[in-house]
Amino acid sequence: MTKTFAIIGDPIDHSLSPSIHNAAFKELGMDCTYIAYRVLRGELKEGVESLRRINISGFNVTIPHKIEMMKYLDDSSEECRTIGATNTVVNDGGRLTGYNTDMDGFLEPIRRRGMPVSGSSVLLLGAGGAARAIVAGFAKDGASRITIANRTAQRGRELAEFAAGLGIESGSITLDEAGRVAGDHKFIVNATSVGLRNEPSPISTEKINSECIVYDIIYMPMNTDLITQSKKRSATVIYGYEMLLGQAVIAFEIWHKVKAPYEAMKRVLLGGF
Image 1: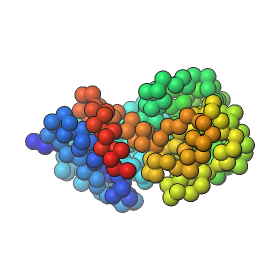
Image 2: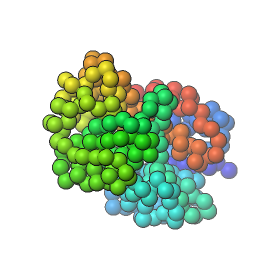
Image 3: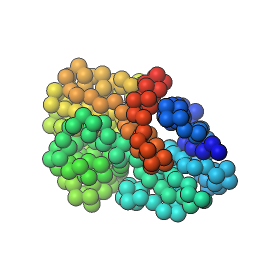
Image 4: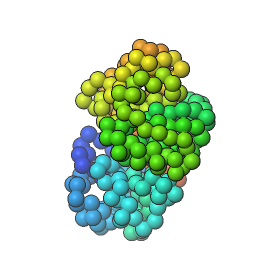
């Protein structure tokens, strides 16, 4: 019997996840299918009930449901509880267990390149849902300091407090200040949505240099203004699609308990741009 997997969110039609997972099923000859399922904001409870009714085997959760989904889980991983959000759910006979692959999905391309995080300083732009997972990831891998730059000062301070609670030295600044100190950090990460619509970089890139690693988690467009300007300044860049792929690989392995076909998933993902 074909096993069905899904991604839920709103909006959802832009999602590349069905292509990535269906390519993996094809590569490994698995009798599974993966669909995008729009669940409107405010209708998550009903959406989850309908997924249970069709006996969904597992599903991914994206904006705006990652935090609220925690309420409908029977169990959750340690990462889920630390971050306070889930993006991957296993359905075992009606019992829903949540995982969060944002953290390790974010770290995956850094680890793949063999870049040491331990003892490094991080400048993180943004304080939304993904930013919490990124902070938790840097704390897990031993970064020494993280500075949060956010449009709303209050949210920046709250995320800095969350980082301090995980044992990492932290502080918060404005986005204007971030541009002035960018060159003092090993990792510069954009977790804002600035760049999705080809806007200019959220911070000035003048201070970025060849010692910096610039990681933009926006995956479409692949070359955001921040990435383009950072390349001109000889920084090392990590693309948003690499985090998307890292998350997909981990979710696949949680659901199927087999090694994900990374190259096949990467091919179809890059073909989607």
